[in-house]
Amino acid sequence: MKTQVAIIGAGPSGLLLGQLLQRQGIDNVILERRSGEYVLGRIRAGVLEQGMVDLLREAGVEERMEREGIRHDGFELAFDNRRVRVDLKGLTGGKTVMIYGQTEVTRDLMRSREAAGATTIYEADDVQPHDLDTERPYVTFVKNGETQRLDCDYVAGCDGYHGVSRRTIPADRIQTFERVYPFGWLGILCDTPPVADELIYASHARGFALCSMRSATRSRYYVQVGADEKVEEWSDARFWDELKARLPDDVAAQLITGASIEKSIAPLRSFVVEPMQYGRLFLVGDAAHIVPPTGAKGLNLAASDVNTLYRMLLKVYREGRDDLIARYSEICLRRIWKAERFSWWMTTHLHHFPEAEAFERRIRQAELDYITGSPAGLATIAENYVGLPYESI
Image 1 (cartoon, rainbow, N blue to C red):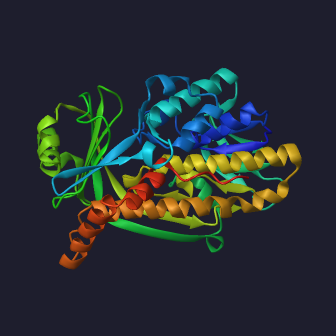
Image 2: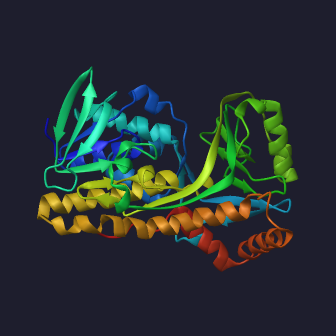
Image 3: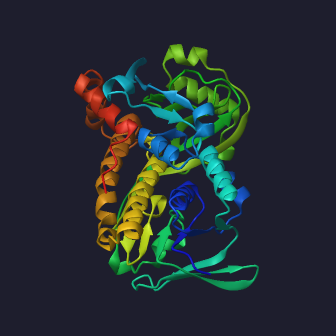
């Protein structure tokens, strides 16, 4: 088999890259070790930055998002039993975010790829990139017990934190930066109306809480829990009691509870590798970086990586600009570290750290009080939340 770009991973970043390239006549093949049904079964983020919304429009998969997504002009920070609204639209010159689940983004991209007749090979076992530091890389994989070879010009590693792409790079060629937080998020999905029209990020002495949604009738809620806690320890009743205790009184009084249809605990970490490329392999999304979900940056950072790689490959194939390829990591990392900083800031100032000294806790309180009382501070939060601009290629 031959293609121009081999894409490892059929999550939203791999599918989005494939969709954008396909629309420009650049051939690509996606290899995914799981089934399509498994990929769609993942419950993930649902806050899309302005830049990602625009990129989905460019990819031609915006129709259902525009119809079913919920555009948000702001969100709220809650602490000291009060609420402060961050006016995203007003503070950023009209930029907003879209509430539209990652599962739905993935579904839209899958359908469009299938309709275009583009090749996605699911349940591809033992995917292995080869000769990445040469001009003739290739990828091998096993399908139905038979080893196959895919020759290509470039390889995009969109296979996540646990994927093979990053592990293929020699250890002495990359550097890892990481912070693991001493807590996780217990999240539930339920078919109840959201407690508010916009997201509420709540900081409380008992821990962080988040009120989110997927639609007008489906809600997503989170509470901070210890890193060693188990889902089985949390009944629905215990979750709702804890969530109410962490919300401002007026919000808690309006909360409509119900049976959970999904419940899970996600650990929190900050993680970046440098560089994000090795020869003709490019790491995209979670393969290269992880952010705690507090800043709603994970999926959006993957989209900005896709944007950078897509525009570079366009110039490679249309203008012969092979020189641009060497700048992929440099350009991506500038935006990634700024998003890492924002996610770290949101996590640090909204969560309860059990080992924090009294002085540190007071400083965090003062920081929240100051920045939410300052127009400049609110503008800083807003411009980071809607997403920093993509760098021109």
